Image (cartoon, rainbow, N blue to C red; front, side, top):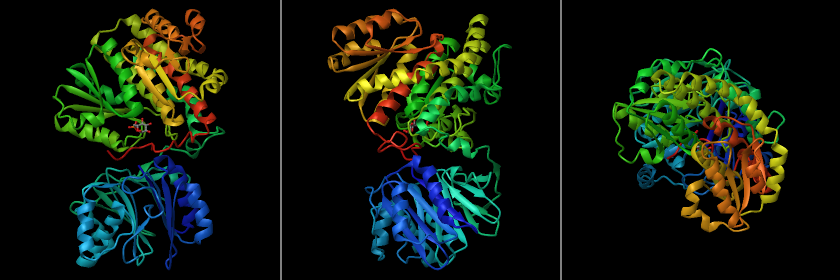
Length: 615
Ligand code: G6P
């Protein structure tokens, strides 16, 4: 969580930092701050609230001069979101200025020692402790800033991506990384630093992604020096050419990133399988999988680890893998798995799913699984992300940047990848018939078209949203493949509208949630064509007799549920196995419209962050 951005070069740093912060705001938006340095005075401005609030404060408080700058947008961990706890933070001498994304776990002990040595702290943050530790080392050891950073970081436990500069060195920024992401953009005689490449993509396509336990000394007009934090040894820089473009990270005429990302789904699902799915020829090509196919076909079981929406995609995968490939699957919250002392063997395959590729719990689960000898396969969206590098192999979803905090296109593209993997394994293992295999390939190829049709119902869904926007509780029900969709629908609603919502397997309703049903209660039921259709119809009857308000997701042309439901949201007919890819669309739109009508911040819901790099 938290976004960091920095610049050193010949341009004015201010607009670069400010635009960068706006692009990184999805990472946290409790407070924001900026420090600019013109070689004489450090201009510091920070404020509780969003980047626009910072922009307004800058206008009133500081001059925007300086060719060196750093900025921060915060998701609060230590200390409440207020002006003082906002970054950047100064060291006691006023010489060092730092921004930090992460958590220093042993900050309290270090702080105590520093207080004993006469240091004074203004904020409650772990970051202010870190900058003073670096200052203390620098003075005590009489070393340059880079060396002081290296020594100090060896004393801290936790996670960090930091950028720090010294008033006495106006041509230098030092950055370091462990656990939190850090990209360095390389221009001509100028350098950019950021939590992801979005702040500098219009200036350069060349970037270095620091690995964990690496730091970089960045000097204007000089080459970057990368060192290992542990032993100070030099590392050869690996410069990547980025594929990202500016258009992908802008709203493209939509009011919100979330809406843009919902509407992008037909094209990004296609991007996910482009060149990988050759439906007519009956071929699925997945490079990362083919090299390790025997790990999968010989696996005793597959364990899927993930968080949030990615966990829901994992639940869909459980149905697909077991149904087609006949491999037992367990789906685990990464945060529970990592601390549970789970039984893992070398015959297990672990699939880690993560949009950002940075989620701390998922990363820790991967490390644990690797330690125990399991083969770990990653499904990530962000190319070059920490998780994509920490896994043995994997597949990218190619959904393009997802900026809305509520995940939408990541979910459907993750399911697309998982579907291709399951189909391929089933074919190799002979657990699916040729005709079923070919049918599903063709149907998968039709999904973008079917998602586009589902999106055409946007207006009708908006009308349903208007009816229910003031409800205080929602229930979402689904069975089989659509049970995880019910969970995801409920999550979308609570995330962005702050309405309490629960997802349940439809049949479980009788074991508790039915007590909540009265005439005020909207119940979203996924009742598309499936093996469980009749059973879901019975569940709807049970709701009706308790006077609940039924909003049903039905297959186009459905007549039975249409008669019973108060409102319907139609989706095109697809095989049940692929139906989550279309049934999730109306639920995304319903949440979006309700949140909008309630005047919520759709793209940046309160208290949340897009990439959760703390556990
Ligand atoms: C956060 C985001 C969710 C996301 C989850 C897992 O909670 O707000 O949208 O599903 O993290 O993120 P990942 O990047 O690992 O998929």
